[in-house]
Image 1: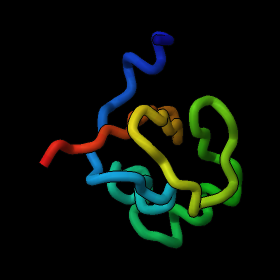
Image 2: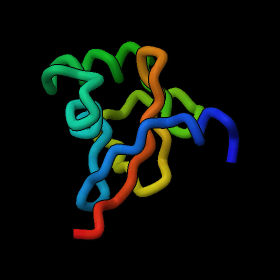
Image 3: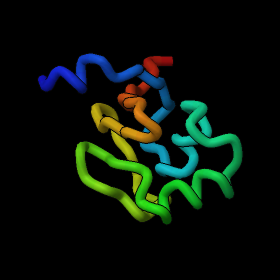
Image 4: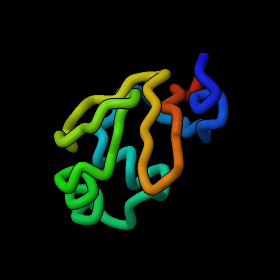
Length: 78
């Protein structure tokens, strides 16, 4: 596991989640419109690669980088 992945903040979801929704859940975007702009402008990376589709489905273990912060998708048990 790369050092950056170890330092990523874990964010629990109930299952696969769209990138735009995840950006709101983790607090990187305040609204859906803000998330849309961030993704369209190329400000978001998923697993190290730029992502321009806010509907991209994220699964457990994916690492999202935005605004100098990293978040790891984790599925909640309950």
